[in-house]
Amino acid sequence: MFVGSEDTKVIIQGIAITGITDISFSSNIEEKSIVLLADRGINRKVNNGHTVQCKISKSYLGKDRLQELTGITNLSGQFVYGTNAVQFDQATISSYSISVDTNSSPKVSVDMKIFGDFKPAEIIQAGTTDYSFQDLGPESVFINVEGRNSLLTNFSYNVDFDVKPTYEISSTKSSTSKILSPIKYSTSADMLMDEQEFVDMTGLMETETFNRSVTFNIQNESSTVLNTYNIPNASISSQSASVAAGDLVKMSVKYQGLELNV
Image 1 (cartoon, rainbow, N blue to C red):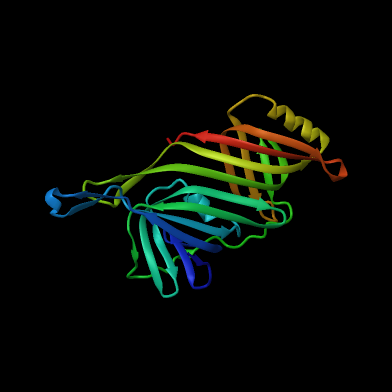
Image 2 (cartoon, rainbow, N blue to C red):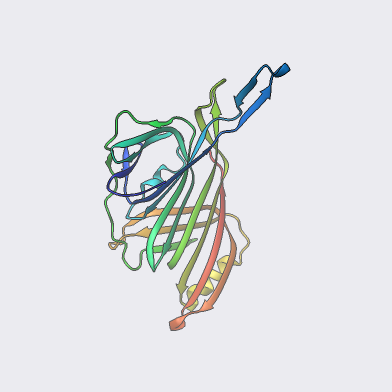
């Protein structure tokens, strides 16, 4: 594990990702051993391919590049630390999450599985520049439920992918990988709304349906949308409400969604 600094870079698909705060790696190798007859020796074999699990954490500084890379297989790049680097290929982001709170800066976290090479790099990449920094402002996160917009005080969003590699005969390195269906989404949010908004929103939530249109938008101070987070085929899993200051209603909701990878 190493902490992001000026000497640390994560380069994916040739782009130097900004805002990195932490990176960690782990891997397991499953091995099978058989003792030969008359104790003539031990036959050892790796059962499954070598997979490196990588967790990347970063601050949300504006339009998020990692969201764009989510759902793409066969990613490649480098982890640069000082004057050294590790290069990788055949990687896929298996989980993406973002959390936003009015009391702290937004945080992004991804889990990435590396099925191919993970070795020292002979040539260190510089990487092209990522998106520029954006000021979010005090009112930057909104939820849209079937055409109705509400300002959020905080929210979290997560999407998980079931990634399966394909190995060539007698090889422990993946030749390709595929995301299997279904893709799973989950989210939770707190919002403040007036009485009429609460009545409208509650009416929607009391309707039993599994294909709602639910999106979250993050925008900058100029009201330009930076990232949109969709919950496909969304259904509500829980809701609660309480009276807040100024006759506003504080509502907490949780949604879950499923999507086919077609």
